[in-house]
Image 1 (tube, rainbow, N blue to C red):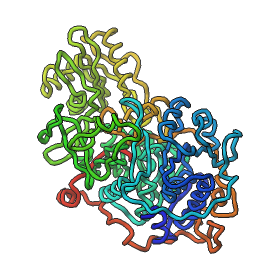
Image 2 (cartoon, rainbow, N blue to C red):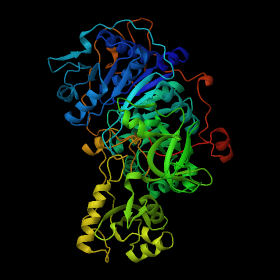
Image 3 (tube, rainbow, N blue to C red):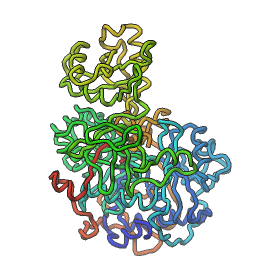
Image 4 (cartoon, rainbow, N blue to C red):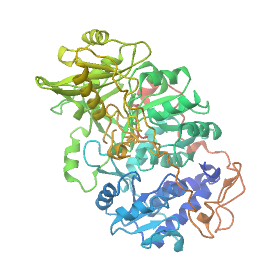
Length: 635
């Protein structure tokens, strides 16, 4: 098997592959293939060979997409890196990755120089430092696509590090192929699909749509950064049909625009639990939301709910995807019955073979049933997965274990509770006591109302002893609840107000800060990278969040400077050439040009496109054709 773009170009060379919103330029598969060939040739001219490790420290742009495909063409292992890390954090990841070269741009070159140490650096722009090589200074060599095996490592993506130091997840060609195939069967595929990239490319939830769209023969729409109104407008302007978002991103978009374009057929929503009110708003405005659960270690999605399932099964992330098998285990690692809570363990062809250079982590991560996600959840009698919280979030009060997700689930059963966060706060007598921070829907709530509601649903030791109300929960940019902040707020509240008189917090919870450039996912979960500037993802991305796993995160809100990209007389020299929206960059008759005047021909081969399964929410069909379907990731 060659790189997917080589096969796709041979099958549908004139079809639309990519729309660059920065220049309003459209690329056909033949045009993109020519640009990727030159990118691969320049890497080869810099001495990069098959099996080398190439770091990518770039914002979302055309050459980032080219580099992802070029790595696959050359047979190198691509290591996408987070440009929001400090230089010290980045140095640790560069050293751990054994990089042969670090590729940066004008907006990330200083960070690369500060962090790279002895690792060679190459810039796609004019270098500003003397020790940085230039893509422009080398003539591209002729390259032949490398033949891949399914178990060959292709990506090395770092987790967010919310439960410790970030780990380098190795994803193989087989992992990515299985994930793309299973996602296609769950979300469906249409020949006219256009998938808008909103998540950062250092998360698997950001990279996955690029590879999937190439496999499907559909198009991706790229934009340099996220802003709520701009993304909502681009969905309508470019007839976008699929988009990956985290809940905070979707909420901000709806606040700015009210609803979204009816061109959308799938909003893959992951990275953090979606509030019931957000799902209900999607239902009221006919927004086709697909809540999903995933992680970096599974190349994105594990389970995804279709819209009707999300609307009818509150809090579910659906059933597992095709080929993904889930087991819920107790503290002894033994499987539990349907409906019983325990750790979620996943197995199947999307699951990573392990972490790079970390034997101890590999030993801890796997058990006889598969990969231990570190998330607590349960599977209902009808097979729907519900993700509650991280194992590390458990509260121990008077020697009894309390899963905060179970308490949150009970709280959200109250019709006037929109969102809730539950943590343990210190107690001299019991060690910890259960505390809840609640966002009411509309009507004011009292402590006694909440306690009465919980007594009917929870054992006495699980009841919240400290209850406070707020207008918004503190969240990271990916939507993950900031549990340390919640714990700090509730502890301060308990000290000043006392547990007897629960009222609104004196200072409202931190409002959600949207910093686009991300996953989940992972996604990804609450992450170091995310907290440092924001988290795992949507992309996801393993370290899961308080409830649903990572997807993979949001993209940086700061616009990166426009890069010239590559300067030459051949394919990539045209990357900055601005075409009208009606023109498509294609492979011209001359070998040295990737720009053509013809429009992208419509997809003419349904054989190259997986069957569209999106519109069907028929349960029996869902059970027979897949056996799994679920929520929040990565994307």
